[in-house]
Image (tube, rainbow, N blue to C red; front, side, top):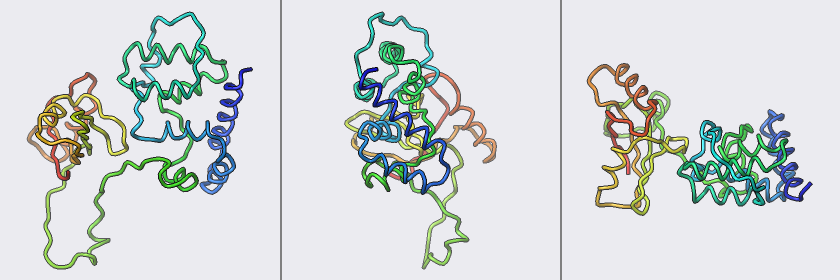
Length: 250
């Protein structure tokens, strides 16, 4: 067995131990025990960092593509590095990853698949990882959320403004060096908002984050609008139309 395979089997062993542990303190103890395992930490950073996108879903990784017959000599670190700069989900990138996985020992293939699709369920949070490995280990992706007025009314002094609550899908749209991408509030990339992203791309400003609500462009009750928003937002296809992005923070 190759050295890289032995190291990955150790990483898999740690992950399975974490999956079989329910208590937060026990999980933290396991993380501390493996603080010197750099490969494990790199895998955790890759999976939990919301800004690392692979463009490969569970459905895409199952796509039938023509693969090279030559065995792959790459390591999982090289594959993760590749995906960070080739994350558009093209067939050639999927085939690249499929070829790597096919060349690995059978007992590690499912593990590698869950890594590249970022679908590895361990029961950890970025907060727990940052508590053990340092506050900057995983960049936190969060948005400002409302709280119940009744629970915080004592903090309100003097005049204040009331606005209508928009009940749609919360998204953030980031324009970074003229590249526009949309994200859910969990930090996952939101696909299919070409119209909205094109409009923002044409704005004469750059390097900004827009925070707001995605709402269906229809008339109706709050319940009807929310139902239509959800339907359009979950619709398949590359371009979701009939949606308005109500920006309330920048």
